[in-house]
Image (cartoon, protein in one colour):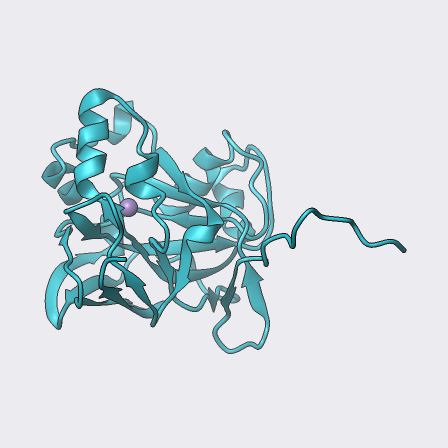
Length: 236
Ligand code: MN
């Protein structure tokens, strides 16, 4: 067997710890749902009518992943870096055009996630009809907790989701407030993409998003799923 002659060493696979296991979850793609809690959609000035619309998605590159407990520098090119606490669904198998009833079978587990966002750039892009990439696909912006295997669990459809900034509660909602449920998101996303094992799906953030400053500490919790922490370092 010959080894491939790469020009330089390819990047190491991105992976996450798995709760209660020495094995790691290899991260493939990262999909994120925008506006999936009505109170957050309203605070962003764009309420959702589920009857006449479909979920809205954007992506982050896997290299944006950073594990819970880490510190990352305040990013460049923004003066309004904001937290968004979210439930993350981790897929263990793939599929295409999956029905809502069949969607739970694709789920490996769940995690707590932060979708850190350059809000000033997002709002500027939105106003001009431009893509969100530089607002959302920020280095170190996909904070993820260890993954809780779903084995035997019902798909979460309720449970408290909270975010504290320096010990003060800023986001407090319930998974029951999700506009599109987890199976509905998987089914809809699978009409655009051949879903694959290792794909992560951020399911959207509730109301109460806001800015962070260097030195701030974020702590998030989701009832029955787990918790995460993240510290904002000094700008580079
Ligand atoms: Mn988000």
